[in-house]
Length: 563
Image (tube, rainbow, N blue to C red; front, side, top):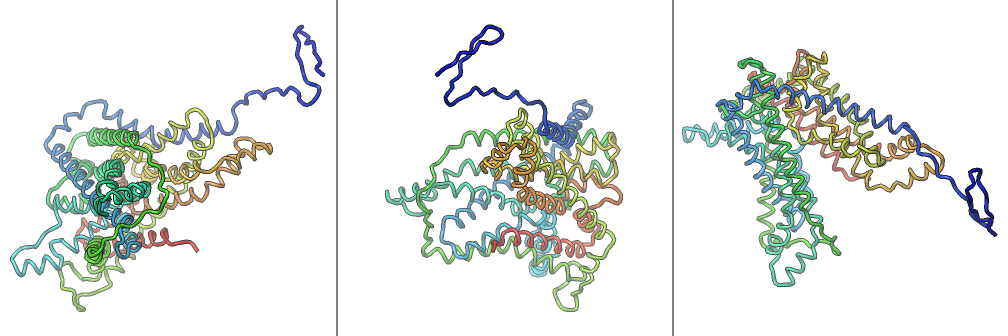
């Protein structure tokens, strides 16, 4: 039975008298708590990312210091930076790819232990690694001292361009190894098996089928490592400067500290913009590489390990020796330097002492540096944790307009060299009252490390079904409450992990801290750097050993299998 209703305006409407009734659509809701959250996050990201980068662009846009880009020392430093970054990135990709293939696709002996050891350079600060390698190949190392006595000159001194490239490679290959390993697991083993059925040998199937499919991952890792090494400060300052090998990072440090140029902030801002443009160009290249990738169907069978046969034993020995050389040997060299009374002394009982270790942990500079580092690291972890959690939840759990650009803006500092971020905050500091304060370093930390938390939270949260939030909305909860009670709680463990990563990264950081240093605000990295520059090599080695062992302990805890 159908009834016809006459409206006051003379219109007609029909409704069924059996089972259904007309349901009026709810009116669009006005601004709610989610809009307020989005606005607050936009303000925070603009303050920590847009404002400092805009400040350096504005200062450099004046053009008054463009002539410095063609000066001899700047051209030389830029050439050295490009050469060292490119060569080390190439070496890191070759070594990382070889290790990834050996550990993931062959029956190499002790693969699990090798993988753990091979990743340790990633958590040892590069400047600490530089100090460690001085004990292996420095002018006063045991090998060079013995060689000099026997043949009249050192075997090889690590100082100079070759040493800088070597150490940048050593501290970068774990990044390539991780990227290539992740891509390698997505390559179907069915293709290798088909090649072997067609008559190809195991080695040929890997090098003609698997490795070509890794080309996008190889290019991406090369770009990422080159950008990171382009503005590294610790290794070029410790290994390069004694041989007058200057890079852009060390040149900027000299300009800021020595006052040898007029308007140093404008000069370093101009150099910083050049670095920024190079980093953005690399980011575009990486984006284009990502768009050109092809999708592969997942394998229906577990990958079969390539049998090395008779080469298994020698290949395992060579790989173990090389990995131990670049991981354990530097720690032993640091230990030796820490225990000797002075550099170059023979390793005999009468020359051993614990004074360097005691001085390293009790000196005023070390205590102040450790205190400031812990304070700044904890504050940066808290700020980045909350900020990164809010951004990740907003961009993955809502469809608000502008959430995509918000995430892109928060991730931008990952592609910006640390030296550019430091110079940007130096330019901004006098205008916001933070000049010569430790809070300037904290602001730079937040700018640099918020992306770590966004990445840590967004990836797992994006792959989690939204059914829990939908159930909360059906139960009467508003959008903001559903995000806080459901999404944020689910993402809290990932946010905590990201915040811990921020704290660990901040404690070992040097580039930002050394450029933003102010009286009373030196960090642990700056304390080690100053000891090394002052000639207290053994004390610097002792403090470096403590930092390195803490880094190794972190990776041990992080990779421990859950009970």
